[in-house]
Amino acid sequence: MEANFEQAVKKLINDFECPTESLKEAMKEFDELRKKGLSNDGEMLAMAPAYISSLPTGQEQGDFLALDLGGTNLRVCWVRLLGQGKYDIKQSKATLPRECIRNESSQPLVDFACDHIENFLKENFSSKFGCPESEFLPMGFTFSYPMNQTSIVDTTLIRWTKGFNIPEAIGQDFGTTLTEGMRIRKLPVVIEAVINDTVGTLVTRAYTSCANNTIMGVIFGTGSNGAYVENVDQIPKMAGKVNKKKMLLNIEWGATNFTSLPATRYDLLLDHDTPNPGRQMFEKRVSGMYLGELLRRSLFHLIKVYNFNNGIFPPSITDAWSLETSVVSRIVANRSVENVKEVLRPYSIRFRSDEEALLIYDAAYCIGRRSARISAVPIASLYLSTGHAGKQADVGVDGSLVEHYPNFLGMLRESLKDLIGDDEKNITIGIAKDGSGIGAALCALQAVKENKTIEVGNYPLK
Image (cartoon, rainbow, N blue to C red; front, side, top):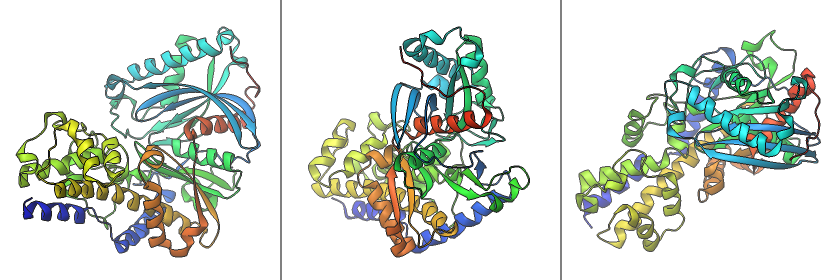
């Protein structure tokens, strides 16, 4: 193994390091950005009101449809809330085709969603077709993209994230667009609530934990974002607009760009090849959509400059996004020469020595570790700045990284301890499974109760 190759990997690892002092500076930056977003629209952090003023108690009951439009999949769900934090769920999931994700028109995405809603209804609620509007099935819609809301159903898409690029939809109310598509199909569904997946995670965790101290919902998956509960009197831009004491806020923290955490060359190269260069810089460092691409670009740098893999660029990973984050996850699952070689063998990566294989493990590990350490910044900042210091607090989390990436939560907690000391022990972190589906149902329930448009009932499946 060449000495300069070893030095190059060590430099790469150092580039991905996040010293605790830099993370503490980032906490201060985050709080400043949060306050700006609370005061004005159009700031880096949207701090978008969800028009939901309370968290579930765990005793809620009722049947609802839920539609979850994420970064990779579309899910149609039927949710039965049973009370005592329990629920039943039946769902159908489909991978979003590329032509739906990147298109000048919204129509392919609307058609795809309506197709799957219609198929789900025919399979489970065929008797509902042709019923009067007062008997339509209530639906909660989880729309996991930056949006401004003026009510629990009225939204405006600010921008796409997670690789989506549908210019026609920006500035439009996608819920209304979808409703029109369902009306044309004569689908017996009414959208009662439109929520972000982080809001769904927050209310789902509050419902299922019955902990009465849930303060935050966080997504670490294809994208990254958070939601929390804020006092309305701390939201200057909402002054006089609502007669509520509390408000759930969708932060849109994926847009954060910390000056205290400089980007690496690999971050900048990745950003250049995204549909939204210069934006969502936090998300591009921490979320599951990007970690594989960061490793791919790191490997290419080592191949080009330091003759790694005998200077050969493997065709299987020549294209951007051809190395998935699951590959990084499998590498870091076991620091052994055999594991690294086995994971990378299908990609025609060959090693001149066992030491080289372990260095590539270390490179992959540092990319995931940086993600977890940076991810602790907004959690720690919110915990301290919203009056919870020294108190027990519960955080709901969801997403592929917290569920599947080896020791992601452990590394995040380690970073939390570095940032807030012994207060880290006061924070419980729990998976809010099915947060997008259950959360949409819970928010639809609140909307139905407040608007009294239809009756909440139990609808027998076919």
